[in-house]
Length: 257
Image 1 (cartoon, rainbow, N blue to C red):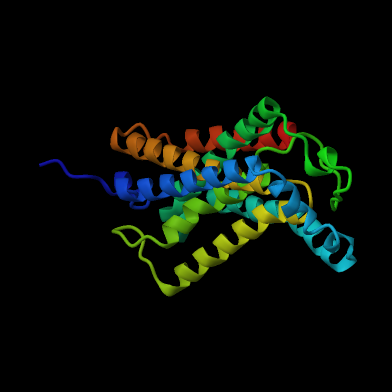
Image 2: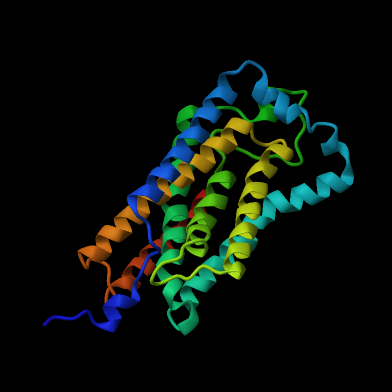
């Protein structure tokens, strides 16, 4: 009688059935609908950014959100990569290897799609360029729609949030993991909307970026599940997947960001 070896069972993704995928797709649809409404409602996107104009003149507000929006992405992103690399050696992290890989895959594949492909295709000027009466905390080149920071903040954290809230054969939910998921969600939301507070993005840019991260993660998680089922992803070839997407991540940071 054939049995599964422990090595084959080591690679696991969190329980991700069709019902969960449909819920996430519904959430992304709502976000995209909200982005369309915000963009096409006359003056709404402008009004949201303009609401923080006076606050951006306050040095305490300006300093906090400048450093938060500009550097917090790296403070979370780089440790995620380090955790993934060390998960090949540290026993306690090994069950999370595919979750880390999914986060890295989503960011690595989605980054060039968001910027430059979608941004150059839509070519929407940033708020401070389109409206000279709007100020911003710092100058950002390129176009506005969609927000790369909003996409990346959720691309890197959503797989971990889902994992921490999952209770299945591999991952056991507890109060510590629930708190960690809540912290990651707060981080992702505040980083995404800090782009509006900083005056470098519209509200619609943020909503679309978050929605795109959700949709892309669902697609890539489904692909990972299929690869595992077909044994195209296993212990023997896993490091090649790691090499490909870590290399793509480095290329993104050097040539795109």
